Image (cartoon, rainbow, N blue to C red; front, top):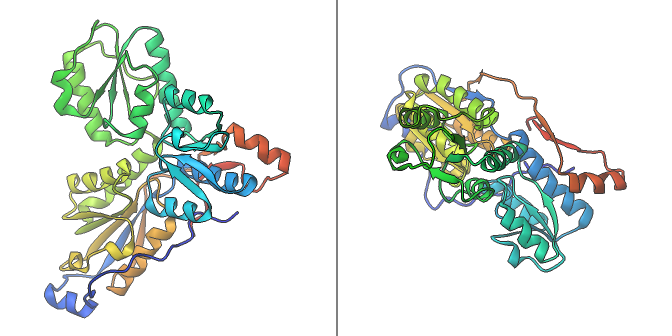
Length: 359
């Protein structure tokens, strides 16, 4: 199988990049230069599964394969799949009747599923199983007539999908600042759920404030913030106090990538920036910097991190120390609609999504 981590040509930079000597002259660095590289970083099992699903669908059904929304929130991955024949649309009514459409890793509401059925579309549901778990929790507690306080970012695709499971029972809480606005029917029948890609610390602060107002507020049966989001935040928390600069590789619409920048700053990094590609790194960031922390969001292929490390090496940051805070070996089966096709075709090249060997 062709990996989605094949590097694309990066956009040109409309300026002259200063040389390492010019940067050093502007602000000399005290002490040896080094990179602290976070592990885990990059692709999680749910993202890997979703990207493989699109690749396998293109391979076995042929292009075009339609995908509702971005399959994962990463511009490089989306562009790579477009080159192979994927067509990304905002809604199912943009898909020709009878065509194949894949639902993204962020999940969809029942209304979207019904819309696809009404148009006679063939569907593959690439929703991350950890997001599906939150959907099932919402359905379960709505059936028991609970008020559900969904902590998440209003307008995010995952939140739209989850709230669509029980719109009459769910209130969206964007963060601690909205706790005072919450009203419930029965304070004895309230539970909180969350978007899977949030800041762990901010979410727990929101929960703390909610419990001050509603002491019997119930917790979800298991953690809703996914293991990958938590692990990446833990890794950058360890690196941040030692870092003069933290570079997070990830796209602007990737919630977990944006959170990593915030966490780095909160835990002591002197500066932190997010980039999609290495050529977006500003060499002025290196002035006076001895230690650079590097990580990437859960939808980022490793090739983009390696591009950043190569650039850093050009500016003298060739010593790379990997800071390992967890090992990830979770695997998810591919969507059931696709597994049947692969089995019939005798394709056993990739039946699971999970941690790929870094390349």
